[in-house]
Length: 223
Length: 261
Image (cartoon, rainbow over all chains, first blue to last red; front, side, top):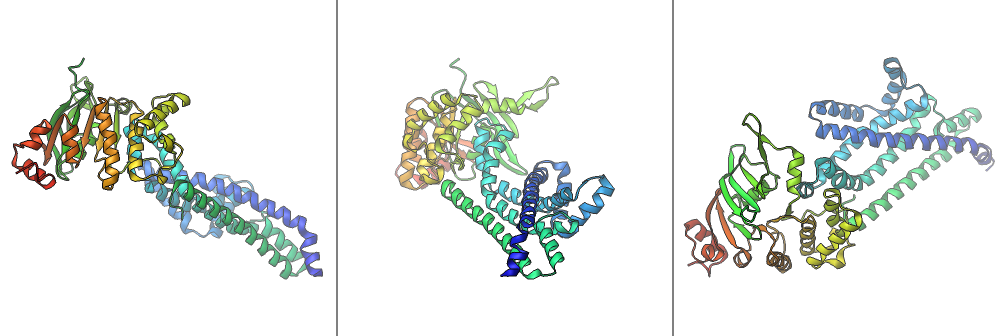
């Protein structure tokens, strides 16, 4: 038990610092991914001239490994665009890119799942197309894809461990630092795994509760 | 003013690619009257109804709402141009549409469904729209369901909410597109009863239906469509009692053998 105390409990402030960074980077990446996914999806569906560009971006984000994207954003973008200026920014941008590709397709499926008749009911009452989208389509899409969004968040949490490679000081980074200091990986890596499991379980449980609530309340198919 | 029909359909054609669905249909709907459209599937009656409120754009012809053209305007050079969408939306407010599949918005309560368009389109205050919505729900006997979500209602109840939703816009005319076709027989009656009440109150209505008894009892005028044309038109006792066209007779005999020999 001595090792647990020395390697884990006594290092708890480091782990906690790391966890805070992990939560921060995941939340920012998640918000950016939702926004990016929505924009990509809307461009793909409704902006005819840019449709192929949106499809190409979506496919590119989905088909490249997250590790490659991370290094690409971190080392190539500053050369090309002079941005991002920090490892932290590069980290959440890379995480957001890949998820936005997946979420764009999730949103598209959601939009296409809203029956056309519901739109027609709005239009035939004199509602404009943007009003119909905002009041009738979008709320239902968000309700429908809420469980998928939560699922994508757990993917982001797990992928976020990679940002330690570009020296973002997240939970994984701190954990490795402790390992490298004491050269004794068993307890600290086990504890780190346990913390990630707890975070992912908590997020999943939240997602399931949300899905159940939506199904009960609106009778929507939440899978 | 009473000489202008509530809805006037003038030589409307509609094609989908090479398929001509409507081939020149004209009729008037005087204010306060009920016009029923009957005919086989594919005869064009739903397409015609959808043309009336611009869910489809006619390929030729025009539809006038209270004398105002719905789809087109004549530009300075004499060319026919589509009307701006804002003007079309303004005219659409005056037409209440009821669909076969109800098309309620599942993320809103019954009250939310009925309040939505009066608030967002007519710009009524929340309290005004709420009062109006409750009055409309009372007319369809669903005041007690105001707080429910559509998924918890039966088909007949959902369709009555859809009728209340259309009524809440205080339209000049109501359009019913096979409003009972996806309902069980016992649920059909409660919806037809509401439609009868509306007709009795002097609501202008165009009803696409397969309910021949309803069409016979409630309509002022019945149109029989066949192959994109009005094959027969007249008072219900004429069309049902002594149809002139052979096709109309054949069609009716499938529904009402006792009326047609």
